[in-house]
Length: 71
Image 1: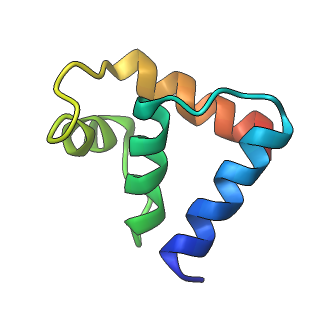
Image 2: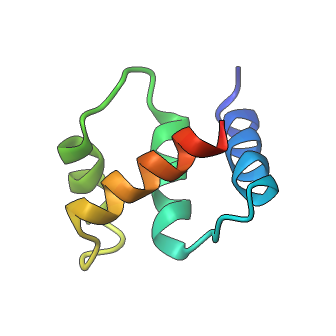
Image 3: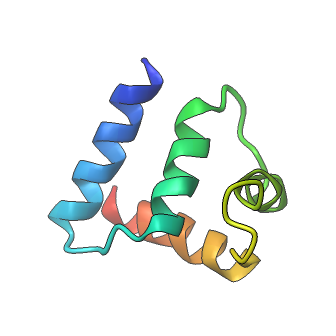
C-alpha cells in the first residue's frame, strides 16, 4: 500500500472518531506512513523533532493511542 493511501486511511479513521488532527499528530502520521518497519516511539520522536522541535514523547504516545482507538 502506498504511503499516501496509508496516511489517508489513518486520517479518515481519526476524523470518524471525532479526534483532532493537530499539526503534531499529522507529523506523526506522516512519519508512520513512510516507514517500512515498526519504529519505536523514541524513533518517531527523533524524526518528528526535525520539523517540530517542541514535540514531546507523551504526544507521540497519545497519538499512537488515538490511532489505535480510531482503528
